[in-house]
Image 1 (cartoon, rainbow, N blue to C red):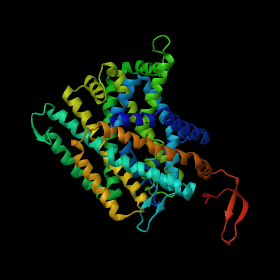
Image 2 (image 1 turned 120 degrees about the horizontal axis):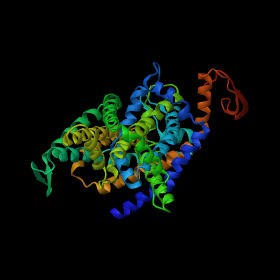
Image 3 (image 1 turned 90 degrees about the vertical axis):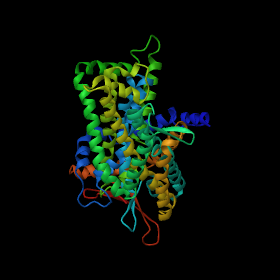
Length: 495
């Protein structure tokens, strides 16, 4: 079974998916004329400046924090280290390229999430790929929307949002506080440390309290934890960079040289470059989730009346996740040289912190493990919201099924520390990758809507007239009428 799952994972996350995601990002970047660079200052401004009269459940910043709670996770610490160990320091450069193109993809996702969302009778905003597939592409494509919702629900429940995260938290604290299992108990024929058991209980209870409060409580916790943990973690990485400032320029030289295989042995430059590219792009996409379709589920709940504005806010998520957080991790690893000392995963980043920070090895390791635990905890919260919205779409918002799913999610977190991880991680990887295919089809199909909405918004914002002739189809009189109309200044929406 493990061999089969590994082959499936390699197939799903192989070069075709990576090239498709990068291709869609490049297509959107060209169509939007490099919007992710030209409009980044405006996007950062909108990120902290909420609309006062927007329709929705939570602020745009809270929606961004909810999305970041799911994307900023163990991948920013463990995933970056894995990519650099496997592909060399050049993998970090290709993560930047993936993020640059991914910002346009995330922009389109956020825009479409608001454009095609629905608000139910209780005032709850519902949106995401399943809604912009159904409402944007038409009801004939509803089967594709259901495919996305199914893969999303399974990815959240069976791994990426539950078991892998809780196991990362409990095992990390177990190693930190009682690595030799001095205080342990035999459960189900296996020795478990009391630290694992107690940590698992505490996390389960705190998660249950948050999740049972719905999206408002999830966003409230995310608004507090996300800025705190990002600033704390990035602050520690900046301290490493400052204390080793003379090594920063050589580190960048190493990254760029490795990215293009210039440090490879004779004749192996192209092969080294391809490995760095594959590992960097794959880890970058997995970290910031651009193109996977998860973030627009949270974006749809934002209090906003303007799809383009939320698209800009959404794209800052990829900027923060990869350009900021992943870069800090990568630079810390390359500066300290811990990527080639024979260690893997979180041990690489832990070694970098222990080597470079002016604290004891125990304190340095503890600071990183606390960061890891917070990253994993917020991922649990974010992915619960994602998977629950997927279930809501599949069951037509059946309240009893949704409540049952929420309790099931909490139960899986409770038993997570006692389950085997290998197959769960692989299964989560597969479902996570499968989510991308329906979403990418929708982004390509609805790209004209993205381009048109963007032109109208910025024409109005910049005070320029915008004219485009479109075909208007009307059936208000009972008969199908087709006419040509010209959009001019002052028209801000196309139905």
